[in-house]
Image 1 (tube, rainbow, N blue to C red):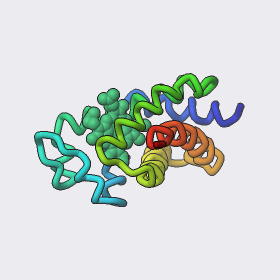
Image 2 (image 1 turned 90 degrees about the vertical axis):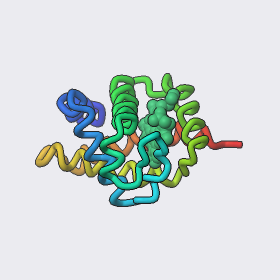
Image 3 (image 1 turned 180 degrees about the vertical axis):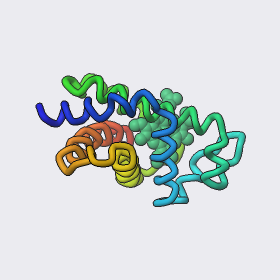
Image 4 (image 1 turned 180 degrees about the horizontal axis):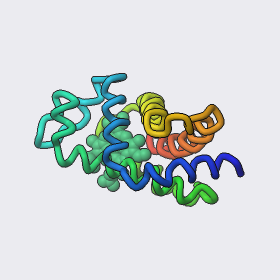
Length: 147
Ligand code: HEM
């Protein structure tokens, strides 16, 4: 449908430049909730956004996030095929101290990145299409917190 076209069309160029776009997203995330910096406890201390951005492991995580989004975009026709993967991914995030409420802020940061990168092409229907897909991903990850 229309949602899938909007998502695929907008991801076409963004997906080719994962790290810079992921950096915009995470910089926004730390602006909205600086406490999340403390969850990235790599060898390099992520004391500030700048510290984090200069940590290779942090940039690897940025890439990992973008690859999950990439997988969701590629599986728009059968998102449920990612359910087990996403449930396990949720479990890993519970283990590192992430709270499911933080995913709302991650979603806001994703939309912010899309808005910055797409300019005029960032429309209300496009925003809604991305929110719909992101909600499915987050719902699947959140099952990793159950019990
Ligand atoms: C792993 C933190 C959101 C995808 C990790 C790790 C940490 C972390 C500390 C383990 C170390 C590492 O692999 O770098 C966070 C925080 C988040 C967040 C604080 C936001 C509040 C996300 C989101 C996605 C994601 C939204 C994808 C949709 C991944 C992946 C891994 C990972 C694929 C690797 C899991 C594995 O080792 O199998 N995350 N993460 N993360 N994260 Fe996140």
